[in-house]
Image (tube, rainbow, N blue to C red):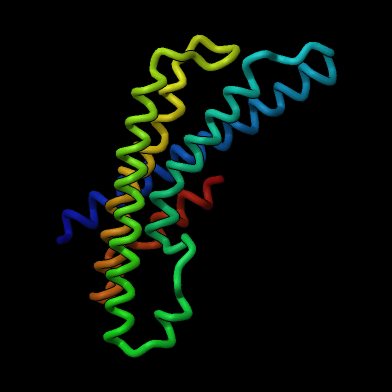
Length: 172
């Protein structure tokens, strides 16, 4: 079990770090867009599209950390108030629902990326498939976090140190 938590910790940390990089790219591209539009009077044709694409990657890479930390919308009230058997059942139901949703993102995100692979982003000579690939990639990286969070809810031991993720957040 320790190997799973070690892998999950690494996957979540890398996904969060890449999400932070994507945020920095969004800020830089948006700043560039504003300067070219309002200072030079000639807006860049590619920076807005690139910033939106980076936003897609930021959001879906951030899924891994959000699921692991329990930051996604949850039915905490029912879990906290109910008796222990109900809490365990709800925890499993929520995990199954989350994994089902992630599986759908992987399946349909891959299908969408394959469907648009011959189309290019406006202003860029890059396939739209690279943007759509954020859906299955982010969902795939989030699966270990959902499983780890479920295991931790039953064992009560958080083997994945939350400090690992807070260290990354503190670097921003």
